[in-house]
Image (cartoon, rainbow, N blue to C red; front, side, top):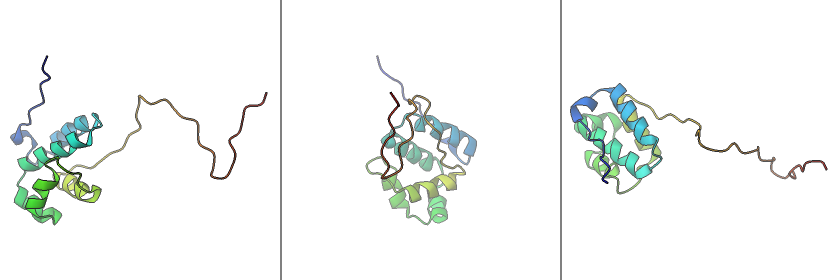
Length: 115
């Protein structure tokens, strides 16, 4: 059984912050940094990369290298690129994680339940 990857239609993601946000949010849900970096690269290539380079202050060659998926771009550069797309990074709590009790403050012993 083969898994079909969602093909990116460059026309849909050119200067369309809503479509970009939906696409990248879906990718973020996979919790895989390599896939996210590659997705940002795909959206980047759907834009005018020369204008994107001028807006972010990053060289075109570096943009292509950063978002090819072979290395992790810095968070600052990633946020510059996302802002140039008209989107922002959002953080939400995971819904599938068991809630942990709060940790004691540094230097204080853990309280034990009374017998």
